[in-house]
Image (cartoon, rainbow, N blue to C red; front, side, top):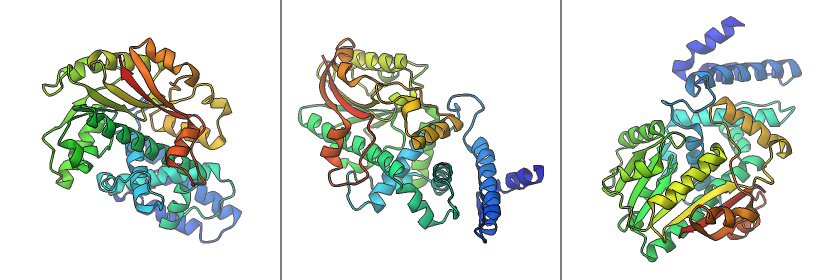
Length: 367
C-alpha cells in the first residue's frame, strides 16, 4: 500500500483534490466493493492528513500548533449564524476568522466522525449538501447548541455586569472569539484580555493581520499554557490589567480538557487575581453523568477523534449538587447553576435537537 500513501503525501500541496477525485471515482458505482475501497481511501487519507496537519505524536496539543477545538468552535458558531433559522447567538465575524483551508479540514474531520457513526452509508462524497447533512445530524447539532448557548449565556451576563460597574473582561481560552470586533458598544466600557495558548494566539493574530481587521486599543493578548503557568502571574504581568478593578471572566470550553487539579487551581487563581465582586462564568460537565462507558456511541467516537488530533478530554468537571460547596472552598459564591433543562428553557425552546444531558453553565462571584 506504500504507493497509495506516497501518492496521498504528494497531494498535500493541493489540499484534498487528489482524495476527492479518488472518492468520486470509487463511489461511481454504489456497491459493497466500491464502497469498501472508498471508505478505505477515506480513512487512509485522514490518518496521514491528520498526522501531518495537526499531530504531535505525544498525548497533548503540540506547542506550535493551533488548537483544533478552538477552530471547531469558531466554525460551529459561524455555521449557526449563517444557516440556522432560530438564531441564538449572532457571531457574524466567525466565518471570516476561520481560513478556507481550515474550514475544509474541519469538514473532513466531521465527515470522518459521521462515517464512523453511520453504518452502511453509501455516498460519502464531501459535497456541500453532504457536509450540511453531517453537521445537522442530531449529535453535532447538540454540540453546536452547547457552543452557542454558552457564548450567549456569557455575553448576557457580561452585559449585566457592565451595567453594575465591571471594567475588565478576561476571556480564558479565547480561541477564535470575536467579541472585541463584534461588540464595539461594550468595548468602549471595557479593557479586554484574551488569554490562551501561545500557538493559538499566534495563529489568530496572523489571521487578523491577513484580514486587515483594526486592532482595538483596549484589546490585549496574554499567552499562557494553563497546565504549566500561573494565571495570576500571566495577568499581573500585563501593564493594562488592574487586580483592584472588578472583572468579568468567561471560561468556556476549557474544563473538559483539564484535570480536576488544574480546574481547581485555575479557579483559585481567579479568586486571587480578581477583587471581591468579580464574576466568573464557566461551563462544566456533570461528573455523575459524563462517564466514558455510559456515553453514547457518537460521543465515544468523538472523544476518540479528539485523542487522535492530540487534544484529549481529561474528564474534569463537578457534581452539580456539590458545586456551591466546592466553589465556596475556593473563595466564590455560586450565583447560578444552569442545568441542561434550564439551558433548553432559556435558549433552545421549540428546537427538536436540544442539548447534551451532562453540560452545565455556572456563574459565580468572588467573595
